[in-house]
Length: 188
Image (cartoon, rainbow, N blue to C red):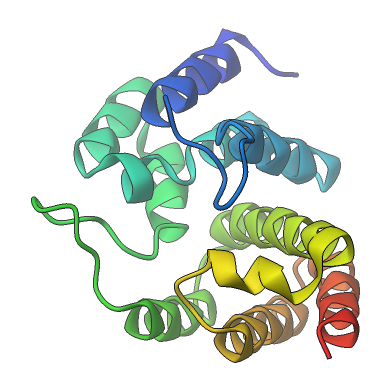
């Protein structure tokens, strides 16, 4: 059962992503954390995991101050899951390490990550992959122009994610593998 804590998580996510949109679209960014929480709940998330899903990008996109606020409002478990889903915290100038470095480190992290993190991260990656597939069907390979990574790098990353989630037995792995397979096929 979801309680008022979940509503507080949504309110914080709305604040953290205020004014942001999904890359290359006019879709309010908050639609993504809401979808990730929905996917996580569909795959058995409890309330802490669902709150972490709402907040999974808050630190990465909103800055390090959100880590402390998440811990104070929702406790250590939610904070730990959020930080386990974070692949780069912007520095004071708003910069993150290079894309490839961050992704390689994140993939290595997932090999050992706790099941809480894997559920939320897998839900995040599944929603992202579904969005890529939908846009690929609508506009073709131009979808890859939205990203800082190349098409080949994006395909490598999602294939690697799919492999890790499959090896680790994450519930979302079959859906992610299917979506990544469709992306590869359509992007040829």
